[in-house]
Length: 365
Ligand SMILES: Cc1cc2nc3c(=O)[nH]c(=O)nc-3n(C[C@H](O)[C@H](O)[C@H](O)COP(=O)(O)OP(=O)(O)OC[C@H]3O[C@@H](n4cnc5c(N)ncnc54)[C@H](O)[C@@H]3O)c2cc1C
Image 1 (cartoon, protein in one colour):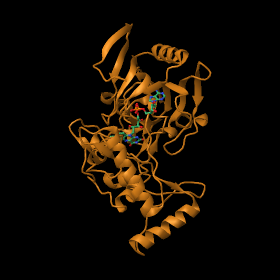
Image 2 (spheres, helix red, strand yellow):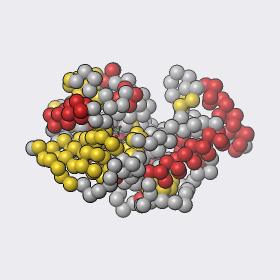
Image 3 (cartoon, helix red, strand yellow):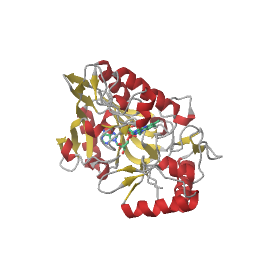
Image 4 (tube, helix red, strand yellow):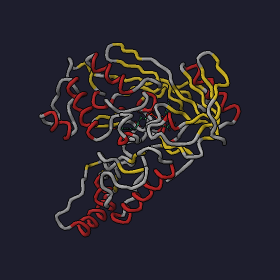
């Protein structure tokens, strides 16, 4: 594939099509080679037509929303990249429907302005509304699985538009049926049921948020204050996009928090004592079914990869151990080399293999 300046080759209505189109500018890492073809669709009909055309021709298809959870290989994508840029925000009482291409954090801001609770702690998460069900986006004690009622998607296997109720989305921590069966469902719209709590937030669940707000977990605060507090906490960790700040040229958390069985946790716990001393205690949170979740950031830090680690153009964020970042001029290979070094170091220290959170395209860890 040649990396040449992209040229518009066709314009059908508002559909825009480019060839040898750079994908790096469409990602928050600003990494990755070009796509053979890039289509930008602004209506559901355009999305479905582009997907059908790619499927009929047998061309591989890559769906792109805000590009904030994508690691695209340096060789790019040999197929059709479809950028979903549909728009639509509709509120009916407490029922919210978002088109897949809506900017998620802006939509959250509008629900807060409307006095509705349930997604206010998800403010500042980059990307599109349509991608939120894919990894069950979550932060600061909220996950979209708690408020999503239905996902409307084009099912590429059945070749029809389907409505998938929450109970059939198989949501779990940073996972869903959509992530398990990648590419099958093209999310068109997402429906949510929010709460009219008279301008108050949902009960604050996360200890760090409660501390910052000066309340107890379970208390409610003003919706606007909850949103602003989360945004402030996120900014301090480089978790709100800022083009001037390389700490945000990332995909947010690069690794998921490991969820361990009882036996795995016991072995890990013993290893921590052996390595860090009898008083050392790893973070541990009940994760259901006898499982325990520990902190990937803690593991990385204790394995010696502290904030700012690295000497090349890909380094650990200076604000958060869990974010791998492009300092400018990095390649995807630079990023992956750093990621592999971190995985190997954590495995050697603690016997735990970290799993990447962002979706990789044409490359693997
Ligand atoms: C600074 C920063 C902070 C972040 N903080 C958080 C956080 O707190 N919590 C969290 O959960 N995530 C976080 N993320 C990760 C990311 O923002 C989310 O996963 C977000 O939902 C990705 O949306 P996107 O539109 O950018 O998806 P993309 O990166 O464009 O795509 C991600 C995946 O979803 C697929 N996809 C995209 N749109 C659709 C669609 N309409 N239908 C079907 N598949 C689709 C893509 O093919 C790809 O597999 C953060 C990222 C950054 C850069």
